[in-house]
Image (cartoon, rainbow, N blue to C red; front, side, top):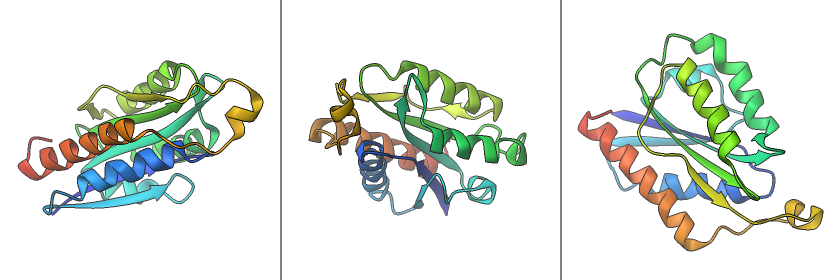
Length: 163
């Protein structure tokens, strides 16, 4: 059985909702076990034990949020040259843009020699004031549906041996 690992970090709930929606989509594929871990609890062994990945994170100050960056930093060298060719997708929650966090995460994935199987999905919350930025988020159902589609597609691809 193949394993899909979804690692997320979330401060205000948006990336967590996106990760859970992707997991719901992946659950439709019975040939794939899906694990969902918060970045602070995930480690190199979790990455090595999976066949594909979804990384969900917020963009903070035009960069990968600290908790997710710490996960990448902590795991980068222990798995270097050991994940080559595995499939991944990115889910980014952003206040206005998200493209820089997507670029940063893609560069890390390139270093691990992972294979992107979808364009990064960036959900813009339009949070611009300090109050809006810090407030709990509710991701619109249409955006969560897109996250579910990515989870489904990655799981189906793993089960079929495409990835």
